[in-house]
Length: 253
Length: 370
Image 1 (spheres, chains in turn red, purple):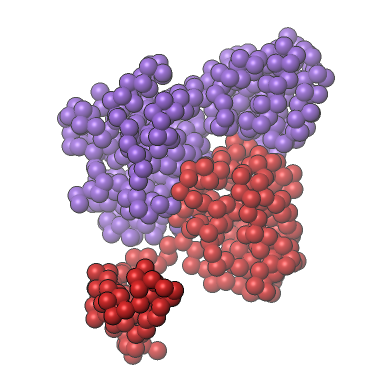
Image 2 (image 1 turned 120 degrees about the vertical axis):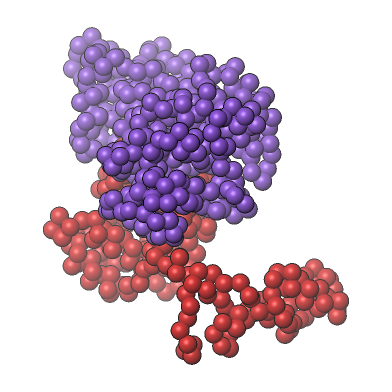
């Protein structure tokens, strides 16, 4: 434990003692393994703004490339106080807790429709979240008693996805999309929102998107209720869904 | 004429872009600066996020800061309001939940830069807009997000400023063509409110979502035919032509919800083959989803799209710069757009020509005040 109270208005990294600013980093330079390479790494770390940079390990990665592990002292701080509360700072429930919470607060099956929309051929994200097999030993929503899931697969047109969601009275639509700097991918995500709006269903459906670069900030901009990125497990998604539904629907409502 | 003067009569003004980085936020900050200079009390909300430092997808792109004057009414999340450190008076908690927190409505006691993130759902945007007017805003500015059009719906806003720009293509002709088609979509003809189709469409638009069925009917009498649920969204191609063949005297299709391009394509294929003409009526232009063809293409094949309610498109703003990519010549782009789009005011708000015409302070540029 840190020996003294953390000043949340000026947070910086620490290693040995609070506020020492120590950062461990690793990178590769496209230069031959040599003393000159080591000097280059030290100078580079200095230019990155690190004080007292130190090379603790370096080795030849492959001829012409050198890999470094370095320490440096970071003088910069951030105001964590200003950032707290942004987004869903969720304490995730376990699978059992989710089942219990859903039984208590929702009291019926929660219907989730998922797809990789538009031209996206990747269904890995959706499969990991929805299918029984799940991901890294956490099984997907299909395996929960609380959920009924429909995984429509990949390259699903938005209008078809919305039609299915209306047909099965979905509580949640989950889409996965690899967002790149091309407008196309983003526009596919906004089109889904706009079709739901035109159908008069946007308000009644929880809309979540996932993908390698999807943050809550991006989700907000696109008109979604939540965004899930790398590192999301099915129980993270499930926690969000049951809490959000419970917040929207009064008990017995 | 200034953009703020041109749009002054719109109580709830929506700003919608054809894509990201077309300059919506510059239009917003320009309007805010002009309205502040003329002493008008504005309400500001955003369907997405405004005033963030960097683009949510491409962090190399710096976004314009949003600077609001004391007295401005703003709808944003409680966290963002707090993070702005501007003294404010809380007017209302809206209960609207977003990924960035609950939306509150507040009156600013001081001026400063702030990130604005209001409701994203159209109905909630409409309600928050009304609430800000009720709290004393003389005009409400609703900034859109990405290419989202829902804020332009007549149910949400009274007038629209559309933003286009070089980000659509590095080919100037292509930018002009895409913009012209988007404007044509916003300016679809309206169905007569007194005509049977208009009356029926008004009933349809007002009915609850669950009960809305698209209807095919014959203007000269004849019993209207209700389409199966979700037919327009998901009908397989063959069924669209069967439907038309089974109803040979039908002249009008009232679409209860969204009109996707796939359906329109099938419809046009049938009408062209059979030499028929069909009018398709939707609630408003935000219900029509075209990404491949312009409305005129479908008209040539016998499908005329009409709307129950019109969108009041007041101006077009142009951003000749595509961030991290290319720039087009502003004057040439505006000239070509003027040639392609009749009777619409076109502005490049960052152009010295526009700024010189201003009597008030210049628009807030990115980054504001350095």
